[in-house]
Image (cartoon, rainbow, N blue to C red; front, side, top):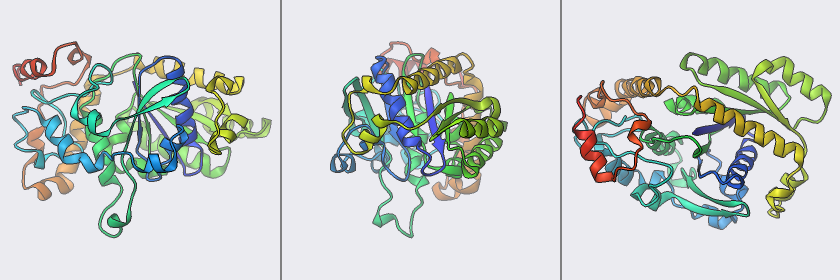
Length: 342
């Protein structure tokens, strides 16, 4: 399952994503967490010290190695240098899994185990926007590594990838917003909070993006009524003040089992909604959307940058789906994929 957390800056999306990750770990669900926000706060929210979080290996710094690994023996990709963030997989590509694939070079280089009191998760980060980027790069060049990995990920039920996305409408600067089974939008009971919801809803509508709203910082009946009036049936649960969260933000979280019952119920409801989204998964549409955004990026900048016709990387007969999961060793899987008809 691939889950995104979005919302305006300061809405509490990183806090809510970290709580959901802790809940999944406590439920003995395998979790890979990704911090794809320009403000890299997910590590500390999961209990890492500031220095430890800052030292995490960045996906963006390993992009050449990631491209080379994912390219595999795909005959449509002449070199790793011609791969861009939207390059889709095809016969011969190496695919990522969430379980049973922990030793692949992508995870070995970039996935950091984080021990929680309720279990262990693997954390990957895009890396911060630093001084060397000022004036010469945009943050989405770093997020591109996450999008490329998502395009090559085959995941199944009862295993989770949870991505803390960049704030606000910046999430729409790439096709990554279509890469998830369910998107949790964290909204405060304010005009700005629901404005981000409307914008996200309207942008995502044409792409079949499934959206559920988590009302945060809800302090009473008036806040709840406001969200219900503005968000309607998309409102899934609400979260109010939490002494547990306040202690976590001070770096002194109690054991997760001590989280307030009302908030534990909210997390269970989110888990149930995410599991239900699995039944509506459409791999055909998912693969078609990959091709759509790859063509857009190829035409707007990719072809000129690489000097190649990147649309030719799309194999029209290839569908990424769970039939590729299996237990086949990587080398054999690549041979099998290469033998599939184009």
